[in-house]
Amino acid sequence: MSESLYSPWPWYIAGPMVGLMVPLMILVGNRRWGVSSSFRHVCAIALPRRPAYLRYDWKQESWSLFFVGGAVIGGFLAAHFFPNGEVSSIAPRTRNAIAALGFDAPRGLVPAEVFSLAHVWSARGLLMVVIGGFLVGFGSRYANGCTSGHAVTGLALLEWPALVATLSFFAGGLLVTHVVYPLLF
Amino acid sequence: MRNVLYTLLGTAFGITLYKAEIISWYRIQEMFRFHSFHMYGVLFSAVAVGALSVAMMKAVLARSADGRSLTIAKRPFQHGMWIGGFVFGMGWALTGACPGPLWVHVGAGTSVMLIAIASALVGVVVYAILQPRLPH
Image (cartoon, rainbow over all chains, first blue to last red; front, side):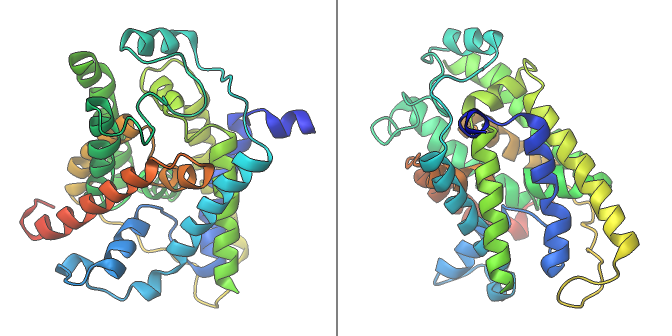
């Protein structure tokens, strides 16, 4: 048991766990599960002068903030009490590809040479953390959903617009991975 | 009470995303390079379990815990889904994290992701300002 606690979980455990969020959120409060709306609610709470898109009763949607609060707690509990080892089983071909882009060998969950407070203002940090974060926020709200709301909930509810969104997520990701990264790095 | 349940579900979600390395930038690279089945396995099995359990639940139950009928409003198609979706996908490949993982990273101690979240919030505000003028 301790072996499975400290080693990364396989997809056939994680996928069903994630998929169960859809019926459980419906069961608990008739909520359509999605994460990116939490960003909208934070903006609606924090902004003194609000554009029309941010003028609504966010208290009706507070479940979203409790959920992401729980996600932060979950990340803390996992990382502190049953962390994954430093050695990860990233595919050799991916290791080679990112080495060719100038990244260090994989350790942990993110390339520390970019994703750290010391390096966030470097060219790579600005692109990947600051601009990347901006695109995630802007794009997910423009698309009215992210991976959870479209690619999991939408597809599980058999909605075709969710498939359009999911394929577009991949199109954007493929462009960055296969065109933007090789061009810039 | 229901808020406790939402928090607990979020906690289970956060633990899962961390433990299965779904918040790993490297795993996202693997996915966009088609070098591993891991992330596809997560996505496909999540959709399958979600679809089956919703179908079963609808067959057995008529109402949610708060007594409302078990109907989730459809999300109608809009052009923002592919335009915004494409923009989102670019951000996903850059940060290696979608919104769920961004929050989980903060808990897991990747503190630089607070800056990514701040940027995402700026992105939402910019979207909110431009929304009336963007094609939808």
